[in-house]
Image 1 (spheres, rainbow, N blue to C red):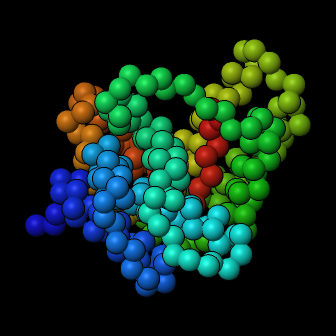
Image 2 (spheres, helix red, strand yellow):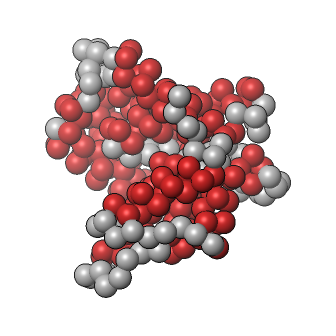
Length: 246
């Protein structure tokens, strides 16, 4: 039986150490002392191992952008990015802050820029997705024509973005609600391209990510988080943008 790294902090640290070694082109960085305590705290908080990997990736992306690397990256440098990615993951799947931190931390919504700027980014990513043909690599159940869904969403958002800046009050809320519906439509159309075996595999991945929170959340909330986690994995696999606006 495979070891759940969240149940054995030493195994969690070992996997992080191995991943950091690969990211450092084979240079071994030992996770000991304060660094070990730091990474164990990630496991205790329930940060999924793949979420921690994405946080490390994010740090390395910035590191490479600054020019040639001069020294191996220590795990301590990656913590801020790991916690940021975990916070994004937690909000995406619906895990409350109290379940993740053991506190009653406020879960205030975050706005990432203006609505018009958000629409510009969404259209750019949808257009790239439509033109790239990358969606054709998705396993297909031969059902929903995803291209038609993409075309319809692009047309609707493109037609609405000019007026987005002037939207106020109820009209704005209605439009934000419509973006949520379009986001759901894109996810559903994409999900229909996966066969039953692939969906089962992705659900197992979602269950593994959420395992640390199974006993920290009410059953109903956990069930919702489980479905949201599957959506997030499908979104990542298909490289879908988030159309909904917080």
